[in-house]
Length: 424
Length: 161
Image (cartoon, rainbow over all chains, first blue to last red; front, side, top):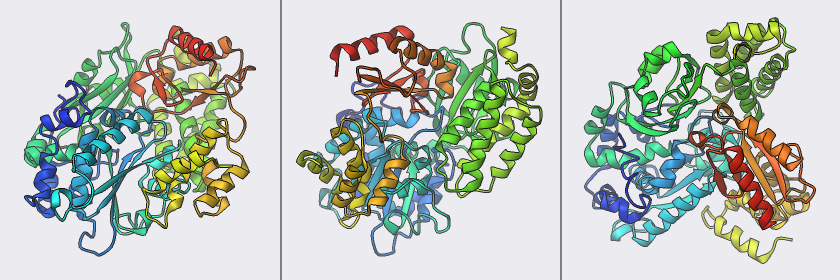
């Protein structure tokens, strides 16, 4: 436990440069500056490590870095996505608060590999404590000569800045995030062209999640194989899991990939007050909900969770006990996507509204039995028909809640009230 | 009017971007002038920000209306932003919203008669393991109970700020 991003968590002032360096921090960056690693070697090591994008999509980081046209002339950018906002997800906040230097070092290494001399860390506007922490770390790093022009008199230069959001979940989508740094509405772009060709300010850009960047220094320090061996096949390393909801000890846990879900649940103190586990959303609000039975037999890695019927996403595990009304829970999620749809694509802009209004009508006791078909229909009309993944993210919970807890929705419509609250 | 002080603050953001990309600082610039104007924007201020950053007024207006954290009507001095999304809901945030409404005597979205406090229900603030939670200014308050909320409201009133 706590071997990579949370390595220094129990130290005094884990966020300080002194603590970070005392635990081997910036040693990889210093070796990079001395020319001990070629960019190709770093990419190969990341490929060996099996590190996959920690923001939710799970795309191999080494492969992503290899897409950048590093030998082309002109400015290139690395961007860190700290726009954490998917319900259930709160791990990047803790990385920024407790280990900001690992993000700086990871971004600097990324800048070197992709030949990008400027980086931006996009932090959501509400994260002011993490923002000040990160800014403090930046100041320390500049003062120590670890960032800037011709670092330690080498040919390597890297400047790093923060950019603050202003309250829009959609900016977690990488092209919306790029638009937002350009000072525009956060509306996703069509792909292709991909950001590696046309990104920030029209220049080649790579966007990675905070946890992905923070994992890089430790991987290069101890070797890709070391990291890969922490996890299981196809899911290298360890990962932060945010366990929230009906547990005794909700918290962020950094555990090896492949850890059984039931062990993670135990770490989080188990279910409260003699209640029973009812449902689990394993990867953040957009990932399909699982029944207790499905969840209890899965392990926390990409393949196992997919086999169970859901996705690892950002590792945001939302636990619901048997007092949870699934109609109410789904309505809350539907409201989120309705509120956060950027309005660009019609299926999502209109569809998320339909989903929310139909669910609200059921919740208010005015539902009709046909509404359940209507919900499924609206969901499938959104799926795959939008520029970005927000549409799918809105539709997937609806499909899975109805599939796994259909009778509860039916009961609510027939009786105008919750099956759960009725039984209490 | 954008004050000299605000302009200086805005300049510290434009420095981060390429010289022909001053408009990248618009999100922060709008926040800075909003704070100076009693937590509220208006069309004139938005145009001034646009002029200052060499961008069309409509582009600044788009930003000011797209993102959640800008206000277009007079707001309370303190905005309590309470999360009502899934993890907070599972941990009783609805009860806390009702509790706040009854002890302040206003509904969510309304401002108390003394202009001091307004409660807004907001979407996930990314602190789910500390649910239920809320935000006032830059600060997060986590693992809330009705008692803790009472204390926070009391201290807001005491400071009268």
